[in-house]
Length: 406
Image (cartoon, rainbow, N blue to C red; front, side, top):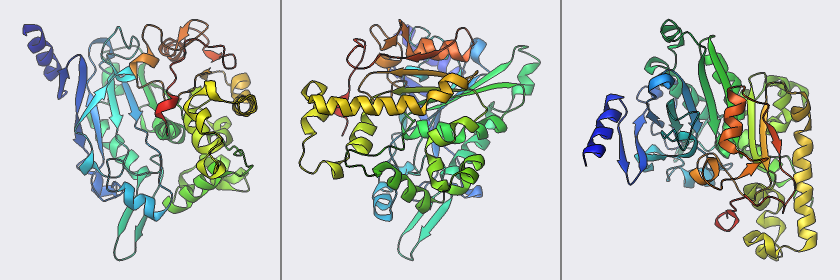
């Protein structure tokens, strides 16, 4: 009991409202009270939010921002439905967020970032924090303000220490550090906002970015249709995203909406970037490669539930998907001097936010290097960190979540 009270007092002294429950770190939600002044709203018009757990010790001036994931809405009806959930309104969000994996404050579980200021950015715009539009038909109103939400959160965090690099410089002579990360749709956000993050921070800050399961491919499905491309094109059009996409990319491609796909603007990025992805990403397997519209007879149902049930022909298609992903990453692998990657062969989706995949006994590894170890080596320049796994089924360290992904 005394230990629990002591730990709680320490956390409160660090100015972070959180509770410890059965070893879990639960961090309270902060609403961005001034967000309305720049027109930053969730889909339903409620205020955006984040969760901040303060850093301490040597990490007190360093920052890790993590975009929450959770898919997208690319038409009015799906966005109206989403606006009535935690993915479209802060009114429905859980007020306490579980911080583990890359957000853990335990040095044994998150050795490189445990004592940094760690922030979870809640996702409520349905457009990967990139839209800037509004729908109003006189009956219903939807705010597609992901770009504004991103800007509002940054403006809220700057006076809380994110912008104090010059102030801390006099106290801590070493270069200050910041990492922008995200998972799934949040991993795509990390791609889309990385250069803006760099520009928002003081010049003496070491800024780098990480995407977990955010390298969405412009890939044909099994019926040779561009299902994911069509989905993203509708998303970009509905939410007014095109003007916020990479300008080099949009001016180069005949179809600027394709610049929603990281493969088309990755080579224009200058901020150091780490790509964490499975070569058999389950979300893309289920929604881009074999979407329901391409499998009306359910021929892939058993394969989706268990890889062991896939036919040889289905496995060949999945290996082809892996090949296409590696091809899309080939120039980054070869030419990027500041980039890192961890492309394993698990059937999974998002590996930085759960402890068992980020850093734990038996967690996924390539050449005996865990995900946390590879990211840390890259961020702190301890070692070259570009790791690509051999093809399925060679990796025995995988934590398959395929049965849980719809």
